[in-house]
Image 1: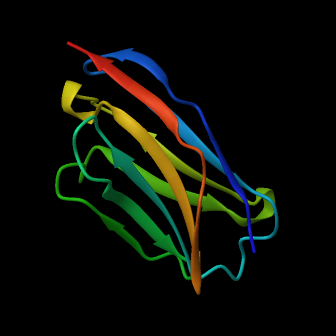
Image 2: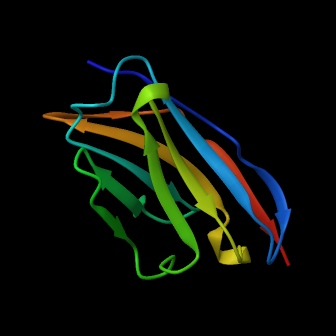
Length: 114
């Protein structure tokens, strides 16, 4: 079992940047995959980006070239660097740890103003 806690959300103008952090309660070294998901009002939760234990990454088409996921195993933390933010990126962003089961954080709000 693992608990994850997100931080770093906030209000930013379009074109700006934010870095989200996801801190895990234990070592993430052998967790199969860590990921970021988001849910906008009235919409289903969607994949943003994932990173495997081997470092392979996967991105939603809508964020490719703008967002970067990374992990620091020494700090048990996964990051999501978000650049060139758009109003349509506004959502609650959730971190998830996939290790046979999926463990979710409580989410952090990201609001991008036009």
